[in-house]
Amino acid sequence: MGLSQMPPNGTSKKNWKDLDQVLLANFKAKTFKENRSATINADEFEMSIDEIVKEAESNGYKVQVLPNNMIRFTD
Image (cartoon, rainbow, N blue to C red; front, side, top):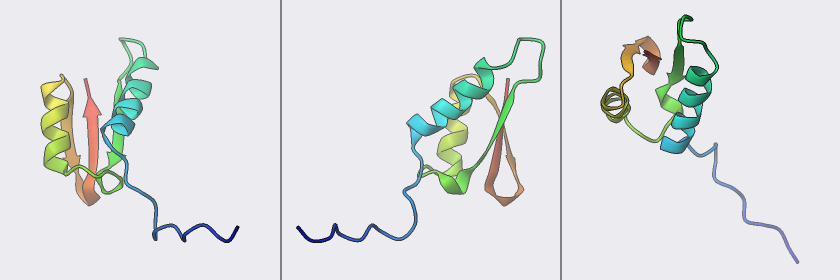
């Protein structure tokens, strides 16, 4: 039988599907009158900050790039 191959060091980065799930969970969970937002660490994603910002803005999110590669999404 033997061992499985040793997995690569670290974990794989998140993708568009993961980001979409985070945003939908945060924005659907709040009512219209509440301040809806989500903040992510861009280092956890395989996409660049510029790619994330462009895609989010094209889908109606307001985006703010914060220090330490953090990105805040609001409506």
